[in-house]
Image (cartoon, rainbow, N blue to C red; front, side, top):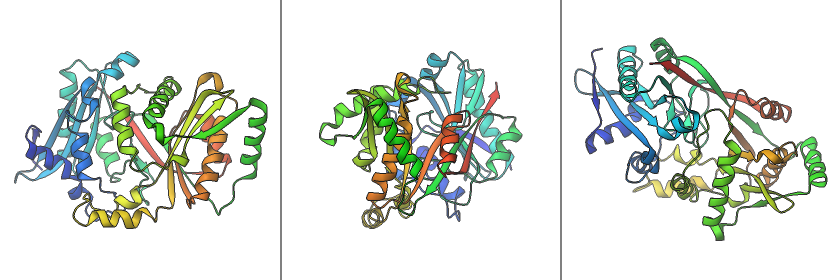
Length: 372
């Protein structure tokens, strides 16, 4: 197929960029359409503070008839460069028909964008940073993704690797169910930890939301600062994300740990709102709002989206206590299924702990590097 690559510059181009996935995933029952209004805001430099420290190029691939057949974002995240002292740029928001003559020119265009800005590595997919959804799904195509996790056709792996990308890191998603009971060893271990280290677990105070979000941002950036690829979020970025999540958050699943009265860590579990979005086809109006209200009451799963403990408080069992409290509170609220994601393949303690608790590794996402 002969294709032409066009940079997204007009409002019309951006609309085609946003809506292309509806063509790619036609007939895929496991794809969860994003809200179009949310995608517009996400790609708007005036609304998304990620653009304040990053350079982003958006590109469309068009066939000989002018139909959109692929898309890609090329990203220079200057916060990543500053944090890790490496000239790594990123690609993300990648979609393509099953044709290397479409995918490869898109990837080469993204590579040229990064080369022209001094990058020596192209990494991805990240949509658009490590603090957003990331990775190429390579295992676990038989079920829809949980909230804020990616999904893609199985042929993407071949398209990307045939271009010359090599694996740099895998991240995992674990799945578990409960019949209403909590593993006894989890309960016992949490009780022992509480007695030994005098820690407590509390929930977020929505009445003082702004203060709590500032505290969680500090915890998030400190707890993750030594993780592979981690980049601290700015205050404006964190507020942007928090504003969206506030609409779906269950305060009983947003947990903060304190040791002798000092803040030590946090865990965020979110109702799996993808169980609602999969029925909306990207739109709230005119009928989507009624579907939202109907399916929201039927959510039966949660995703633990992040869990962090400050360095000085690790090995006290706080991560185990977070899992126990999430189990307990989730069951009380009618959630019997859950996902823990994403977790680095190199995070051996957490991977082993989840397997020991009966969780199942059911989806694998891969990040790739390409030398420029």
